[in-house]
Length: 274
Image (cartoon, rainbow, N blue to C red; front, side):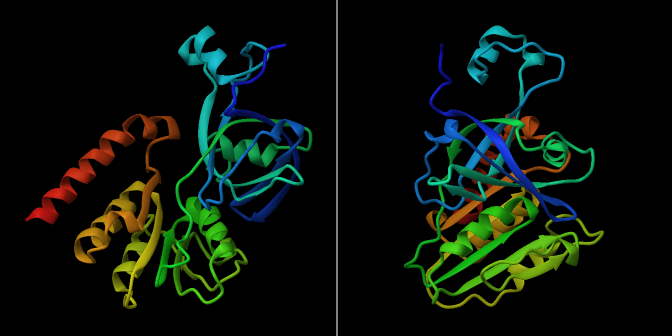
């Protein structure tokens, strides 16, 4: 019998938990995850694969075979999610999903998930862990960045200085984290507006900062410009990226993200050279 490609994994839902009104935790596991490997990063992500109902997919299932054998409109949908936790001994993978009713693909799936359901994924990928030698840390993001921020806080040295800003809808969306967090209640304000204000208003401590800024692409662009140009932080001391973009699903955002990033980089280079 053919095997799945090395970077493709099939997991079984073990349990779910409603963390907050808009955050659902799904824990998946099983022997098929034995080849899943992470490398100490705190922003590991996987690309979750969701099949269309009514489509007969090739078996054994893999994204690669689907793209080779099926028309594009029948390809499974792919959504990128941060790994909240990975326990290699128990073979348990934890993913937290932002949920807004019937909106989207992954959120409704998580809300309906039951033990025994199958979850396909690609990965993991990633590139950030807080530098223990940094003088201080800045972590800022919206709900989509909260799992990675929480994972980073869990590994920070006890004596590390960290300024942490997380924008959420309101008090009911707060989570218990291992370090103090400045929770910013968005309410009806635009996504990221409070984050931009908070970081701009922060009195930066002395010394080398290691920063993690992720979330909706619009505010990430604003904060990147502020941190790179106004604060003079070297790019290698920033983990900064738009996880998602208002008005675009994951596939549409991935289709333009590279070009969007190139435009941001070009504008930044111009500003830094002027």
